[in-house]
Image 1 (spheres, rainbow, N blue to C red):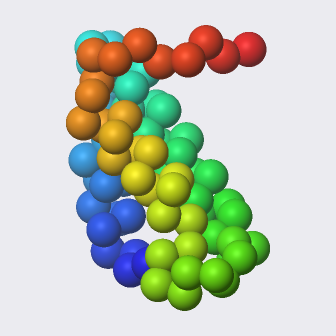
Image 2: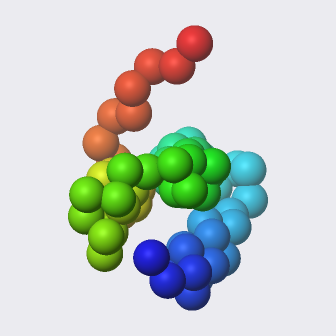
Length: 73
């Protein structure tokens, strides 16, 4: 996957802690973190988009900021 879209996504996710969407943006950042942490170990069954599920989940969360986030802890 190209690095530029992830760089842009990270840039857009920079918001103040008191932003109303900060919890959602934190979830998006965590999904992007997971992608970056594990992308070298993804199975290469799909050579074009290994790890796409994490990127897709991040995009879905970003597009639905009013949906409740799962409980953590």
